[in-house]
Length: 193
Ligand code: GLN
Image 1 (cartoon, protein in one colour):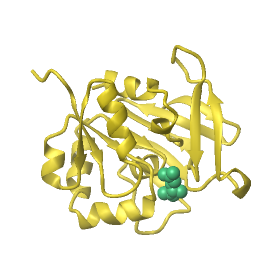
Image 2 (image 1 turned 90 degrees about the horizontal axis):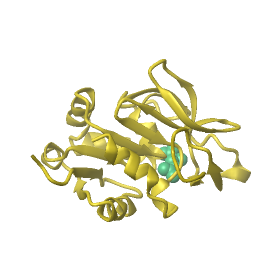
Image 3 (image 1 turned 45 degrees about the vertical axis):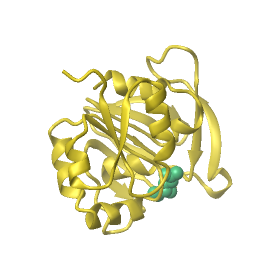
């Protein structure tokens, strides 16, 4: 039995470093995933924020798309934040034609869903079932959920729609939980592993 879960952070592009720090603080072992063999060694995965079109392109060029998709279909626990939420969704609106979602969670999401004046903002979110008060959420050119399948739990929303959802062991947020210094969502993710 492994004493510490090994969590892979997809490190092709974007905001992956802070996730590893938070995981370390919580007692998990974080490894950066860039190749299919990196992926084979992990118990769970984080798909970070960044630019989903670029990340999608890099998933193809790195050879990670097919094995990642297969492991997710097999029940690999996953946390997707911002662009990571887009990459893990079933359908992407306002995306590029060549950025198919990995379909790890039954969501239709819209990229860059918050208008210009709110491209970046912070909000205190009430999160379903999360003790300790509202979660300080940092949104950066964030996506929003347009529709969620039956098996999806909406854990938090803003006026524009759901921004934190879970289906089984896949948790996704429109915002960047790794940036606010509040570790409760990473903790929630680790509890599912
Ligand atoms: N707007 C980016 C995208 O569409 C996501 C932004 C982010 O991850 N902070 O991929």
